[in-house]
Image (cartoon, rainbow, N blue to C red; front, side):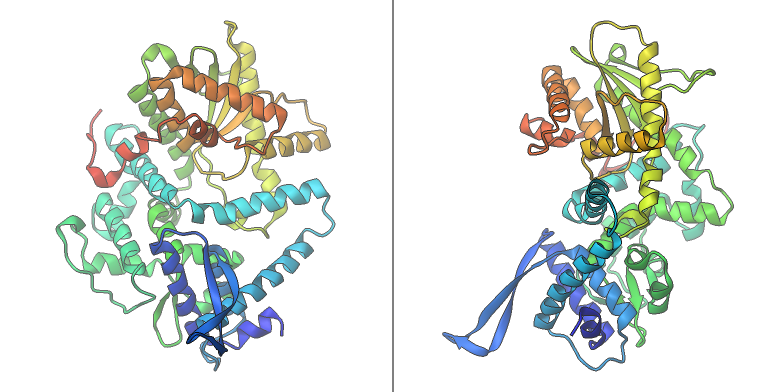
Length: 489
């Protein structure tokens, strides 16, 4: 029996509850992969069921299984799945998913197929495995949407959209979102309205606010079935209303992701509803201020400066000096579309998205040509706000191939590297504490990318780890739950 026929036998709400409980087990155990064994109830070994097979369970495939259950089953199906049933179904899904992916990439050249699969796989799986990045993302959104606009009068006050909508302060909204994470890591079903225990730590969060937020997390089976996002729709609405009006938690990981990043997504939704479409442009300006404050925190003024815009041509944003290198930096506030965070997606949109890389690389090249040479090599960094979860070298090769096929003006990609804001925060910290280590990191990065030696870690964080550089302390300092910073500048 095929996977789709098998999953159609099981009662949907029971399947979701069982999958949800397994996601909770992974979340609460701080695991992204767990090895579970199926048991053979027909044979005993010393009074215990015999183990007949292992399954490497991951939270991202549990999300896919729930989606296929929504499409192919209902609450009126008769069979109630056991954990053994779900593990067998999970293994069937892996074969089905492999066959489906093979059809998607059929006809593509080997190099195209390799890039697309790695790109999609990294976007789909890595954030589940690095859940600490969710808290860091929350801290940055908090600063850019709330902290910085309160310190700089010229930045738009988009946080007011949330305060007006929910009748509470922006910090209270954020704490209420975290309260939802606490709720769902302990429940697979929520009785609405939910009653949350009062606590001094909750700072104004009450049942009314929590339940109002919760409604933004809920959708119906039919909404998911009709969505063009397919399984990714569950990232936006990770709570489902059953036909018995139960609120079913699909995944502890999905709830956490939405709660930690909803400062941005809810602000974006409210802005669009009000006819304001310039949020990302404004956040680009806030991102510049964010980086300026980072540099001010760690480096003396003579070691960096922000370049003035040119009326004649586009320039890079920043220069940072070390002993051995000039770091030329172009900032990009870019949020990858949620539909791309899967192995099966609109492949052409990825190449279109990569044009932002091309534009940034050209600006860096032009700015490098304008710089007065002082003998130090120039390292050109494309600083992304979002975590891209993909090897810089793979993107560089892909970009070079696109430019060649399109016959565009040649572009030098020598010493051009992508860097996430998390890596950049850490790198600036390393420069301030031990510039020799920072220069060794830069030199090793150049060597590995030139040699295309992907057997070793080639990302900035991986190289810094090898050299025992301190972890990122700046983002810990920015944690909004550790107390607010000064509101004036």
